[in-house]
Image (cartoon, rainbow, N blue to C red; front, side):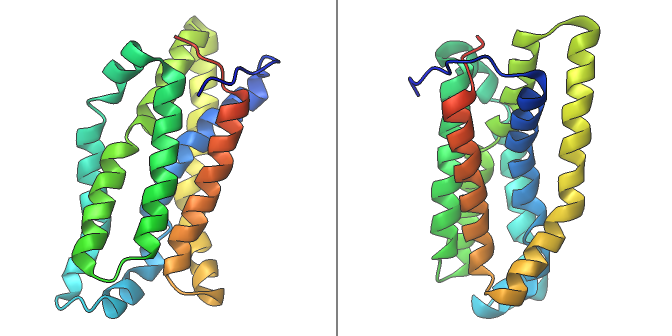
Length: 193
């Protein structure tokens, strides 16, 4: 987390990076919607309604986890918290691809929700560090607009993955996308605190 970008981010790149960080959080929810049936079948879930826990537990833990990143970002800096969240996203997504039982998947989804809550909180803190007034509102609106496209596209991405591979590859795609965003953030995101 010590690499320091040599050139300041343009506003377009800044909006793109912040939107990409937040979009990964939305992707973790919606990309697996088409795979819930396959997941419950492969992991032998007895009650078909239990498969919804893959989403519900993530959302609950993400909400609880949102209480902590602000304080951690104030103490240790925005950049280390963002990079830690992205690293957790990659690691836990890869671990989720390898699960052999449903309970382990639910535990990993809970941990993912807790660990990646900062991916929603930190971009807002970074925006407030960089901008104020009307310009801050405009940047937040652009990021929100970009972010809102992801829940519409994510189920389609999950369905495309299912056409060519099994549900486990959805977690692989999540890890790959997060690794790309993590590399982008590591190379280009300055500390703004």
